[in-house]
Amino acid sequence: MSRRGIFTRCPACGYGCDSVSGLTSSDRPADGDVSVCLNCGAVSVFAAAAAGGLVPPAPADLAEILADEQVRHAVGHIRARGTFR
Ligand SMILES: [Zn+2]
Image (cartoon, rainbow, N blue to C red):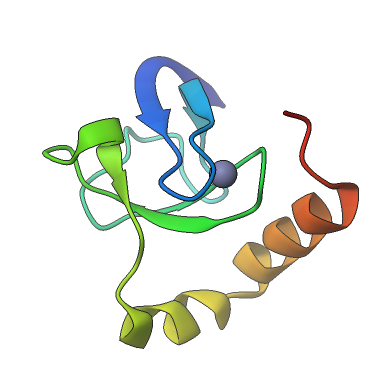
């Protein structure tokens, strides 16, 4: 289920989005939750106080995030498709 009215901007490519869809939950994302950019596949972390609402993960956290098969699948699919903007 997607939630509209949550505005984010990818720190890697600048793509802006006005909704989110959870892989495992339809709850509103909280700080520290993982985001995958629909445009470029970059992995980010929700941070409400940051400009754009997302920040890149700490390098030490990225390996742990990419250990999740669903995240790897989403990133791989988006990167194989290529950016749409
Ligand atoms: Zn992006």
